[in-house]
Image (cartoon, rainbow, N blue to C red; front, side, top):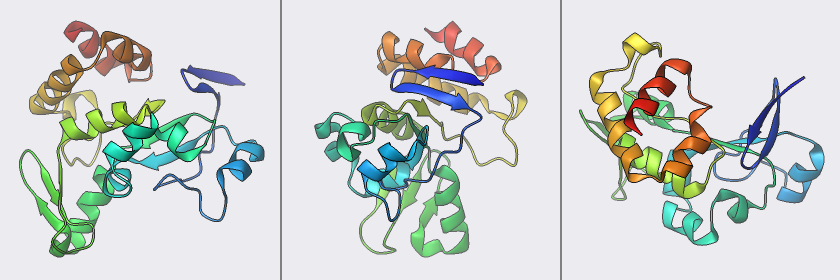
Length: 184
């Protein structure tokens, strides 16, 4: 069996990662999750940004300290869920060229979501595997990522420490890894 070596532990591949959208796996506490033998969990960057919030998780020193999980954590950008919710019901917000205005409760509270904020949030969460949000596309591939997507990734990466980037770069697809290496 292959293993993916991460800062937060090893992830045996192939792996099933249960959903811990808001930092919890439904019906289980962190002790149950840690004792279950699962190799990691998936959390949603956007949902964590709305509850409990990036600042709260950062104060705890990342999602592992916040949740008590001692397994690798993959944070999904949340972009697909937000796009889907807004497409189904405009009360959830508005999709603009460079940002999404998301109203998680369909009311006054709004979260401004950009690709830069997505990446920065995941660094603040100290996720083991980060999933980037890019323009809404039917497929993801080198020739489908726009120049604007790459500029956003570049701008955000330049704000992060080289150590953080080098720890995560091996997880990126080869074509984007080459582009990131050109930037740093």
